[in-house]
Length: 252
Ligand code: BTN
Image (tube, rainbow, N blue to C red; front, top):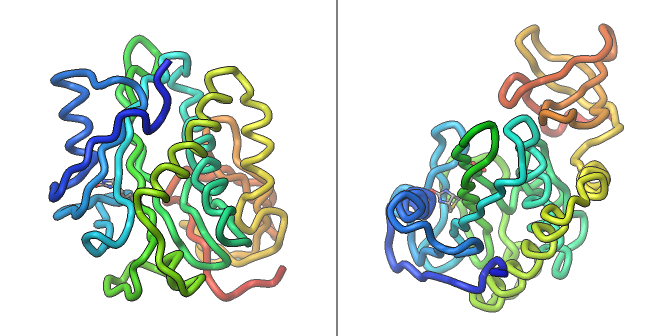
């Protein structure tokens, strides 16, 4: 059985590793766990058409190929949970206060250290293939884009990291979580995800289509929607981008 990172393809310069990986899946179906890692991305993609800032040679920008054909379309958020936990597990070896900001941003304190872009292709109600794109800020010292709150391991710990070593450790952490997923330990994954969910069970300010409100995150439902108890009007379930976190207005 292949594991994540047993086949690593290094690309010096590429538009986007996600594009490269999905092309590879279509043309030659690489083995499961293959990781495409870029020295530099020219058009790194973030969620919702955002771009991903990453200085060449300083960070990990990669995409891995999975074939989670055991996951039904309606359960696909479990993949996101397992992957984000794998990244969080890796980071906890170096820093504390690691959280997952729904749906799958990785935060240290109130700053974003990694972003994940998952692109699934579907067949007969199941996930046929899954490209997991990951941007992890490692040695970058300064961020210039208007991305909110970026941070790197270097900025947090004042030391440089060997990117190959990070990739090996990260692959091992991701593989552990993905193996659990394959073995059917979904309840544990769900429980671990909720344990590290950013701002869970605390009162904070949010904004939705009706304006700013005080609310408490209660969790994430089975289809990946964020469940918030609104102070004035009860429970709401939100899809991605239907609700925004308001930073620095905490009222824990
Ligand atoms: C986000 O917006 O938080 C997701 C960012 C994902 C960025 C990574 S970098 C490697 C991979 N290739 C891409 O084009 N994007 C993802």
